[in-house]
Amino acid sequence: MNVKAIMQYLGKCRREISELANVRGEKSVSYWFDYLWCAVRHGCLIRQYVYGEFYRLSSIDRKESMTYPRLIKVFKKLNHPDYVHLLENKRDFNVHFAPYVKREWIYIPETDFNTFCEFADRHNYVIVKPLDLCEGQGVYGLQLLKDNDKRKAVYEELSGKNIMVEQCIKQHKDMNMGGRSVNTIRMHTILDKDGNVHCFKPVFRAGVGDAVVENYCAGGCCYEVDLELGVLITPSLSKDHIQHKIHPGTNKIVYGYQIPNWDKVIVDITNAAKMLPQCRFIGWDIAITDNGIELIEGNHNPDYELIEFFGTRGWYAKTREWISY
Image (cartoon, rainbow, N blue to C red; front, side):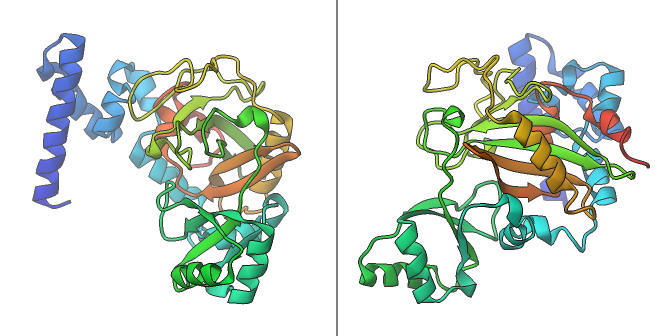
């Protein structure tokens, strides 16, 4: 990190700590000393210190928390770099995990115009996904009209780009939260050295308003799900930092909301995790349908904010029980 970047980060720290101190009616100097200690001792970034409420944690809890450097340590140890493309590349992912990817899709660089038209005949509204972006960036819905000239124009616009076009997923009605997005479950798994799959910290991610994607980074709300029962157990984690107990724009109360087909989620994700033993730590994005689950993607370096910023915490210590360091 160069000097300019360091100064910008320190400026961000100053603003965040000053705001935290003002909200809590305390002096910022004590937070400054505490944060610097947390940064050196635990690798805590300012966002986790403030919005992940690291400042509230005891010394023992801080030691057990998954900070960003600790997350990197985990996935570098568990995920072989020669195989992460099966998670990073959406096309490779769909091929490798085909038993759990039931939607129809085409990869534009491998698709001629006739095949594109045949696909359009079956699916007039589709989802376009750039393979070079993440966190829902660049994802949009597209109407594929019957007119061949207009289809040709669309095809030529898409050609030459590293993108996939996918059939829309029809989610279970109980997964709908009043918006347009397909809402998903983020499930984390670790495959231990004995081949046992450990599922942990499931999170329900729900879009807000007219958003096409449900991602936290795109303004969606995230709620922790009880692993055993499949019900929501926390208010939201969201970019507006408001802990919503009723999902925004709806009358749906969060606490106790039941995720459908939860038993199938656990069984299918456990089986999917065993299909890629070279990557033992994965954050899965899962759609819930009437018949079970549909895998959206897998992440070899999942967002630690969803793991540690809200709900149950201390996942660095918990995951170490399944890992041989």
